[in-house]
Image (cartoon, rainbow, N blue to C red; front, side, top):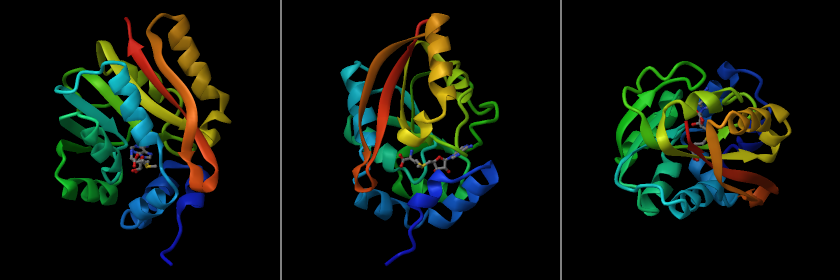
Length: 205
Ligand SMILES: C[S@@+](CC[C@H](N)C(=O)[O-])C[C@H]1O[C@@H](n2cnc3c(N)ncnc32)[C@H](O)[C@@H]1O
């Protein structure tokens, strides 16, 4: 059996550890995660479609990894995918799929210097987790949206144990920067009994 990495993904305490995990995992990531019934990409894509996200405009898939999320977004009808990730090994797998018009190697905890025009749709699927994206990244990503733009993302049970993520989202709601268009708890990786919340936030100011 191929080496298993999934459980290591939830015990990361630094960006360096996360980058190192995905370097070793890139070649077998999809097999392991699909085997465990990875459901958040299809749930996020369906939520965005139900919120009437435009399909024919550039969509930025942050933390696109090997492009598994992109394949599912494309199946849901999104036609112009761009991706970003800080792992060159994961990005190489995404590039091989030929489904992204642009791929950017970037750490999402840094300013998004490669974004020159706001996006009407952004996703971050499987990306908010310990050692991955910090809670304050949510506000940074919202600033990359057009007013009226939609941000679809997942937060798994481990992520939700850190109250910082929901606190940052609630602050953006209270300040009337965003409104919640979709929020649903369901399966993330049923093979290991892990669930997630899928949220779609609309930038309103
Ligand atoms: C669980 S994978 C999800 C990949 C893809 N979105 C999917 O659904 O299959 C998380 C991805 O986030 C990326 N990532 C983690 N921390 C990051 C950071 N600080 N900056 C950029 N990418 C990061 C990893 O390299 C990895 O490709």
